[in-house]
Image 1: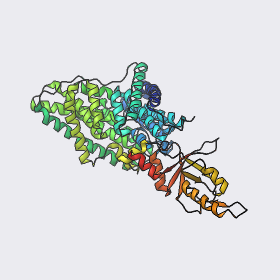
Image 2: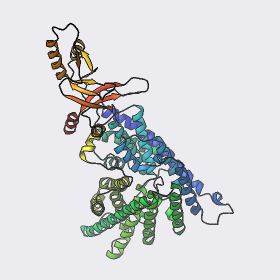
Image 3: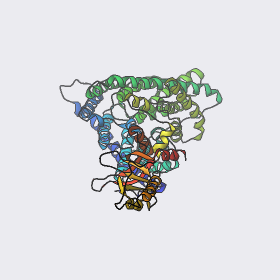
Image 4: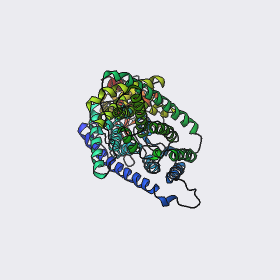
Length: 572
């Protein structure tokens, strides 16, 4: 199926596609949540680990080990290119593969997350939710053969749908996609993303009898005298986020040469040992976060659980256990924020009710610092609290944490760190962002003609009668090139004057006549201007011809693209 070549999909068509993407993502994410809940129920059954050969240890101990081992064995026998999952994989495919997400990676993530989250690993559900949604958007774009710039928008729609349905925060899902995944704000991209987030959230509420949500009831900041405390909380969590990122990066490098199943099994064993010491380690993250947000988590529990989640989630991310990083970040932030709230209350005499306030601010600060997404963190706090009077305190805490983490970690987010650890170029400069957003379709010059290398005067006149700007020549044994029609017209005029006395028709060789001749290479019709620019750089040609090739139909050429046209499109 092919989109009309005359134009890119408009904002209405994109919004309709975003709605379809959101509905499909909502169904997939609902299935994911049901299967995770079933897996948790299954692993908690006493009879599952009642074999006499097993020592009599808590069920959760064996569940964590068995779950990690099972995921490790599955991923060990999956091809290496299909083991990449979650948020980092989505950003990688957008940057380097035009938003084409392999379906096998999505299925591996789906199955792996069900087992990992169901067995009590310290991972979030939202990684698989984002991946499923983004993969659905990519599949729609591939089926409709949409331009790669449009596929990027649909991938963003799917990712936003995943966040929205996972946390019941549709606005945060939209902003997160713009800030972290697509990394740009535009009206054309914003409208379909909003539609997708709302659609997925509606489906999740319809299909999930007990939609996992975060609830909060906090006191407000009493006076500006608490400003130093908020700054201290933000700075502390910013430093913790820095060392959290560094630990993940260090562990990722160390785990690279160890077999996958050993890595994941070791992580499961460590998680199981911590779960024996503190059973809350393997409890669903929503339950722990809600306890912290309610102010019901004691100081000792907050500190210990926050530290354990830091260690276990670092290992899970470094060893590539499928799941999400957002939930662990939120849990760490809520626990440590709660602990800092308890300490502040003891030191300054603040009311105990404000512990919940610090838990909420810590959640947003840790989230914003690790992912370098301050605006999303503020929206999360606003959506969870439902109160605008929280914005002032949230802005102070979140931006302090983000700035401290950014300055101490060279401006890196966890996504950029993990991409660089894979040896991938992380480019997010304004030029690259702009070129990725634009398609070759409106930029190419359609006023051209395809010609043979040698023409008679009559053949040349017939081609020039349509007044093309370029003539494209594709010889069988030499590189293709384009030549300006004005130069061919001049050659025809000169040859006509010299041909008056000759009886045999004279041939014009377009490869030899003087003129603006440029060697060219092909670029797909679905390509973005970023791909076209990379083709210019890699091939060293001076022009590109835009083509579409299918299995059954011959190659069709749609236009000519020059560097000057790309520069003009970028500047306008």
